[in-house]
Length: 278
Image (cartoon, rainbow, N blue to C red; front, side, top):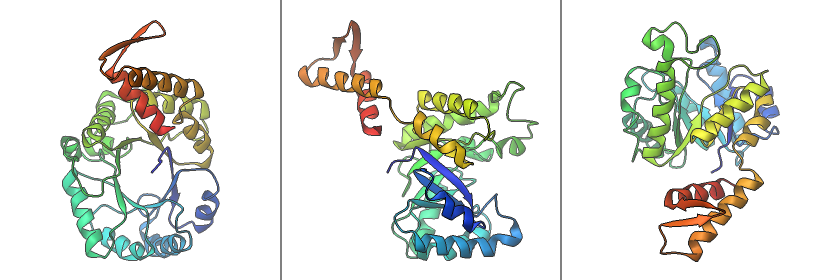
């Protein structure tokens, strides 16, 4: 499943969901949590369930409310019969929370929906980022920079120049390592300044450089920028093919020379990853 771009859409805005289908995102996240006011959740569940039923095969995910509260079960009971491709789990606290959600999905008769946890939104979650390996239905790991400052008592998530503060940067890094340890995709968090497309391009490029394979979006204008950032260029693909060909021609070699540079097995792993993403 290709997940370069995942666009959040409020679950109580059916007109936006319809419009979002044709905007080029690899997946839509129909939101029942933060973007829906408490009094509108019943309406949002009904709209999301109907939209899911009408658009099977469109790679539609649902962000439910945290499983520690009563709203999550209401979300699941409302939408699972319409077969979402996946569930985005906020306030996740390790592999055990993913397994608990998987148990609830199975108990409600759902055997197909994958799970994408938002893995850094509480202080306790930070100590569980190495626990996701082997979790049931795990599709990837993503993180968030908006809830964590409140959880730890921080005044802000970013420095004046826009960079994350050290505690928030740590959450990003641990999410990346946690995803790698669990052998699943790492999905970069949203870029809130949706009109700043140049800033988004730089942020997304940094994410891909660091090892993220996709990114969440909050506005349709961000989709094309994110898709471009997480799609290998022709020159990258050509270089990756050359690395793979060199090792195929020399299957017993540990180190080779290619275009005047030394390459070894880690270069082959990276080349295969680029070709897979292409």
